[in-house]
Length: 202
Image (tube, rainbow, N blue to C red):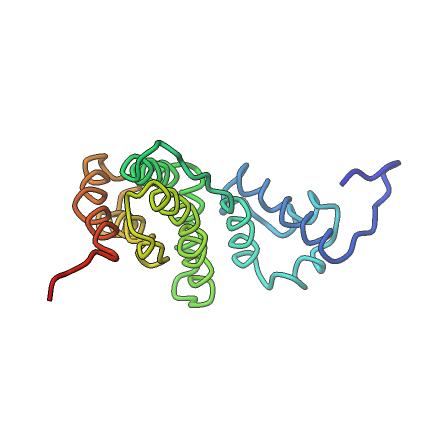
């Protein structure tokens, strides 16, 4: 928010919180989690550290909130087929993990250590939020008649991204080969979603 004449515009509630988060997002993107400090965020947001601490108890909590805002919008591809859409989503996630944003996420996970509440927030970001584009592409697939409506389940929708995340954890590297992504889609994801609602003989 601009401050005419160098004065400070008093903000409260949601407006102040948004200003702080936007400032934290800018700091994260410019300096990474290692460069994120309450002082820098307060200066950029035009507020004081007390206003930040009243909303986020520490630097890690603020970093997680900023990362969640930074990655809240994931576009849904529309290639015309479920297989194409699934591959595009996985490839986008693969690029993200090896990007500067992925480095921020890895730093946040490392800083969280065993902090269950923080880890839950990050898992929610990669769980519920990550399910949205998958449910969108599944919805299109249902409309095209590729899969049954029973496939529209969040746990089913996120199977592919969970498997990709496991690749990162098991391999300890920030990217996965494209043939692994194809295998996840062709050997696990598509058979699973196409099997939902299928009639079985008894």
